[in-house]
Length: 297
Image 1 (cartoon, helix red, strand yellow):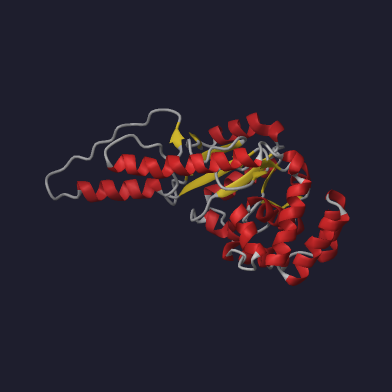
Image 2 (cartoon, helix red, strand yellow):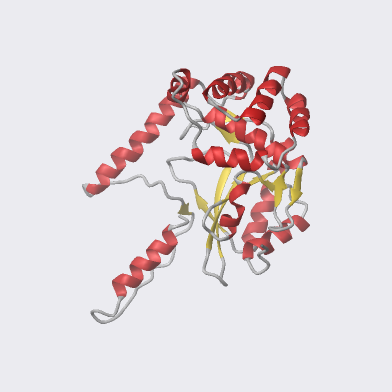
């Protein structure tokens, strides 16, 4: 299915005709939902093109929102695009570096941006550049290993760890579109023989708790030099952010200050008043509009 009348389709068409290097680097299994505004877009952009893609988005009328205090990561920007024709609001994450890791911390910077950008193609159905399936599958396995927590590691050691359904579905989606010989060749160009062998095993037999343990250890050792901060600092950041969220909600319920998880527009917006007699539907309209706008912010 093609989305010729969708503003995002037109945006990607113009982006493809520019010299800006980008690709939609993850969750391409759900790209259709993204075009329906039911999921976000995650674009990896060459850091050298940062100023150009910002100017491109501004010219398209897309608004940049400041990242919230909670879950604020370096080299990631939040943009919102409104489609006049459908009323859809699209949330676009611009990534200038591949950063992953545990929740709230994202302590690893992978350094694989050039490889993904060099091996992307334009998907004919959606007109958006995507990495070849083998590269996206390999990135998925890396993310799975580096996002794991000590609790996940302990559960895997006890044989109680099970692959998350979302990862499981995405793994099989990409596996069915990948060639094992090509995947092996890519692994050998980036990693050592041991990691290549583990990736091949996962491709052939799936990711059980035993394979997860090997991926967890192997990729963490390989990317140990790519840590943005130590394990202890990652844990401290995780629990700090958790406390900010939980205590903030309690404080808000008592009428106090709350540090929001929502992105904020840089400039002050307009004040809009809904005027009408009692029973005319002011409250309902206001609630519906707030609900609609809150879906992507």
